[in-house]
Length: 291
Ligand code: ATP
Image 1 (cartoon, rainbow, N blue to C red):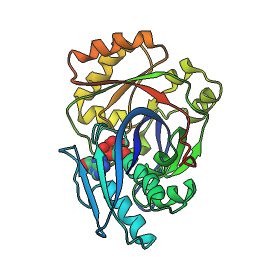
Image 2 (cartoon, protein in one colour; image 1 turned 90 degrees about the vertical axis):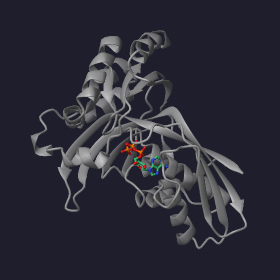
Image 3 (cartoon, rainbow, N blue to C red; image 1 turned 90 degrees about the horizontal axis):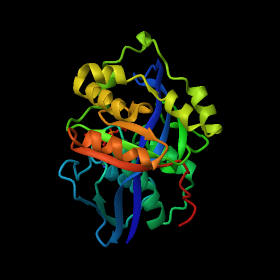
Image 4 (tube, protein in one colour; image 1 turned 60 degrees about the horizontal axis):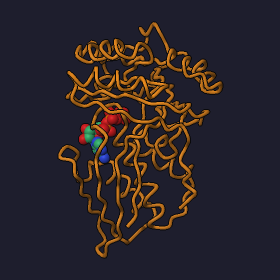
């Protein structure tokens, strides 16, 4: 049996720069991995089947699960006759803007590449990943990266410096599709300064990274869910700067450079928000060649 870690991501920037003929929005977003992770085990079985189990009462255990989709795609594409039992230990909040499902799919590609000895490169896994979801290619390699197109075109960036993230999530689920459908991208007035953020990562300027955090979906989610706006406002009271909503929400986070500041933000939020997490940033990409 082998285990894979599936880490969540946060957006440092999220911009929408156009709409494509296929109906998808064209995005430009900088993402980075955080040390909040699901764990997934893979075990060969005799029956020619995919069996998925999990400790989550929320995510489906059938072909709707992105893990199942990833396993099924590899199995059929490479004519694998060997069955697999997969167990998901879910720790990442679901439908939270943290790409939990995409990261699970990416971990499944990495794990089954090892179990079934497919010897696929990261680039091949990323191409397969794009067939399952736009955020999957980023999650194959992790680190800090710029995602373009539907989100599937990845350019690796300098890793974000070491630091902490305080995440807070209200007990609501937000559908990414709903938020994009409510976005009027032509009316966006303030676009994130993506190039400046890339420079700030290059120069390791934590303060500038905090100041450049921006997400054009905040306005949409805040208007549909005023409680998320309130949470963002409260977080700013405690963190002062470096506060942003991740993805389409509802998770809001504070980027913190020093551990000594973390407790104040955590304690301040814990009073009215049940799900608060403190985790580290992981800017370095995964080394998938070590197997
Ligand atoms: P993103 O930031 O990429 O939009 P998200 O964090 O908002 O993702 P997910 O947690 O990935 O959202 O889940 C979104 C939906 O996908 C849920 O409704 C869930 O039922 C479904 N889903 C399928 N497979 C998984 C999985 N392995 N983990 C979580 N959700 C899954």
